Image 1 (cartoon, helix red, strand yellow):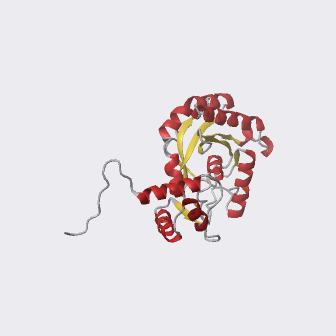
Image 2 (cartoon, rainbow, N blue to C red):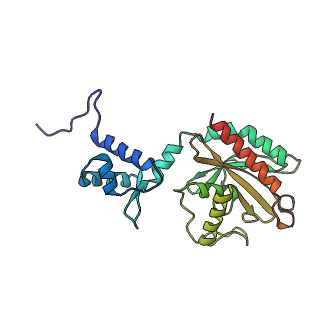
Amino acid sequence: MPNCARVPGVGETIQSVERAAAILRLLASGHRQLGVAELARAMGLPKGTLHGILRTLVHVGFVEQDQATGKYRLGATLLHLGSSYLDVNELRTRSINWADALAGRSRESAWIGTLHEGHVLVIHHVFRPDDSMQTLQVGTYLPTHASALGKVLLAHDPYAEPPAPPLHPHTKRTLVEPAALEAELDRVRARGWAAEMEELTEGEVAIAAPIKDRRGIVVGAIGIRGAVERLAPGETLNMEFVSYVRDAARAITRDLAR
């Protein structure tokens, strides 16, 4: 008879899958990276066996290896799979009332976005509450490096890939140097919000802040966009509008934690 792989019966488990799951739990248990020796000691496995499982996890994107240290960390694919439980439609549904309130309070248009394939996907857009002609932007994409929403999402996603150089200059004020963008993302992380000063569209300013889920993971961003003379008269950002945006982001975050 030919050799056939035995299919596990009811109540049985597959050892290699259990071991892979144990590796992922270890890598998720802290912020540090782990080497093969550390993982082998923690799991009581031979290094050869562990290497085989790690190669497979790296191949499917669940684990990444630092080329400088040789150590392992959770991969981008696994992070995005883990965050996907919060459906985009759910995020939009839970944010609508707060976005409406933000537009009313600021008297500017309110936007909510998420990362999607290296861009910001606009999932909700509230018109500025006046009689001006406006176009609904839901479903459109914004560049991450030239938008306040994108800066927030890049700054708080440790596995997000920054846009590859050369960066497209949407205006003369767009950040196109990777080092300048990274410095800007450091500032965003430090202060908890992002600003975009005529970097996407001349004459327009935007402010954004992160939306977090119950685990503290940033799953979206909310912000406002308006004329520079209203949001940043004299090219100095009006911090009152920053407080409006941050208040809305905190309110949605609290709602998602329930």
